[in-house]
Image (cartoon, rainbow, N blue to C red):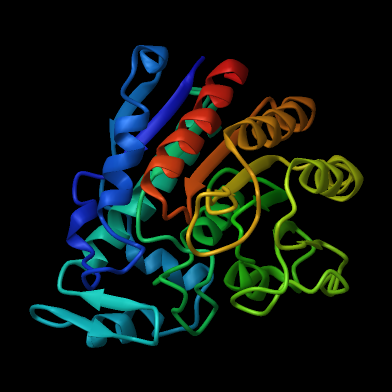
Amino acid sequence: MTTLLVSQSNFDQHQTPVGHPERADRIAAVEAGLAGPRFAALERRIAPEGDLSLARLVHDDGYIEALARLRPAEGIVRIDEDTFISAGSLDAVATALGAGLTALEAVALGEATNAFCAVRPPGHHAERGRPMGFCLINTIAVVAREAQRKFGAERVAIIDFDVHHGNGTEDIFKDDPSVLYASSHQWPLYPGTGDPRFTGANNTIVNVGLEAGSGTRAMRAAYEDRIFPAIDAFRPDFVLISAGFDADARDPLAGLDWGPADFSWVTDGLCRLAARHCDGRVVSMLEGGYDLTALADDAAAHVEMLLARG
């Protein structure tokens, strides 16, 4: 078995204003970072359109219909201070979801050990009833529910190393004992959630706040002391990763001091836990990361480790 890379052919259909950090160039940078000979062993697929009605698994009734009403016939509409929808946004959202579902199926059926989805827009800030933080639907949450609904997973772990707390994913699963949500994030920082004291109704929320300026030592302590043991105790049937690369020291939107070696290290740890509990089944989906050079470097480090563990 191997590592699967699922890409979008229409990532540029989701348009944001000039100067917005979440832009189509991000995916082009990731694709360029994964184009070298060391990635020749990747199996590559183009994402089909996913069924957006599956958003009902994690979002309020009428959520997708409300987004469709906001979508302009042309141009761009502002949803909130940071979040926009354009004429083609839902088409890009559909293939982002299709990528996650394609990756999930390949891993579930043993066609690949693990997978990475190079997609946009990101999803982990989208709450049950509200798009926000560059995110329109919570793609990884839908993938988690499909792992349970379609492939019989009893326990799904979502690990989020984006520098911003995934308030949407926490909002969706905070009362659900069948999903572990574990996040390392700079705290305090946007969106203001992620208090380490919050553990959810069933102690299946693990938030580790990291101080601005902290780097490798604090990151490894967060995972070795809190997040890895929580995953080990949870014994997941699937490991999903919200792979944001904006904890990199070069990223303009935050203040942590990670580098490619840190993303490689945490990926290795997550893959080892997945090998212990669920035959290595890992599906990783791109979230943040806004310095293009850093994003390419960090995504390459992440996927290279997935390949090594595939």
